[in-house]
Amino acid sequence: MILRLACLIALVGMHAAVAQRDTSLTRLGLQADVAAGYNVHSAGFRLLDPRFPSCCATFTSGNGIGPAIGAAVTYDLGAFIAGEPVRIGARLSWTDLSASLVEDEFTSFVIQGNTVSDGVSRHTVAASYAVLGIEPFVSARPLSSLPLRVRIGGMIGLPMSATFSQQEELIEPSDAGVTFVDGARTRNIYSGDLPNTSVQMLATLAVSWPMATTGGLEVSPQLSVLYGLTDLTSRLSWSAASIQFGASVRYGIRRQNPTPPPPPPPPPP
Image (cartoon, rainbow, N blue to C red):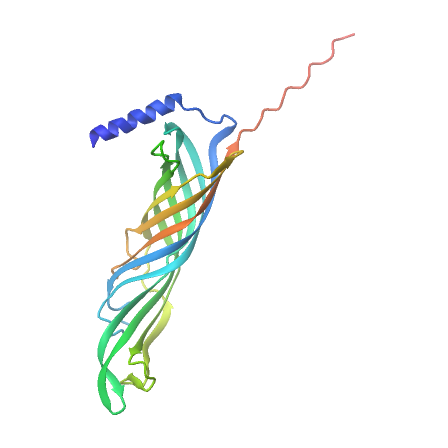
């Protein structure tokens, strides 16, 4: 491990000494990105809150789809890896981490005519959850053989939208005349604000492939992964991760050309 780190430091130093930059650009850049994410939730709870009864044994997992947008300011360091500058930055983002947790469970309290029989009920908790994220990061091109830039960071996410809907639905038997003991095929229906939400800490990793670079403008398809290090609520085991695919655009800020000096005055007559 120490040997690998030493080799990496030596490589950075070598490229810092020999690599050339576009001198018409400053080290500052502006970046924007948009993506669609596949969200995966991992859970281990039975009740959202004692106010919302549920007959589910345990909610364990769920998934969903959500968009994400972001804007960043970047700064190129003096070091280079694989001919590309090492870059640091700060990103502001809005990320939809919504998902539905679904669990099917056998039940013996199903009324069919005048008899009690077995059935299958489906428990669902649909969470609408979005965060406003602040993300410091560092990015670099790790391999000269691949035109890929890797970004690693950490995000602090403030919950901006956190609501839920919950229900238990009888899905087997499918006959409309078969019900729970209360005469309905759906019960334990609740909705509202998700209780006890907490600030999110997420690890982030993104890989981009610059496809077009001209005049300081760089367009890249991008694959990102967000991994939640904390729970969505302070009282439940419930975390979120997201795999996102989208595109980013970065604009390198150009230097201001100095104003040429005025022409010398004409010679005296």
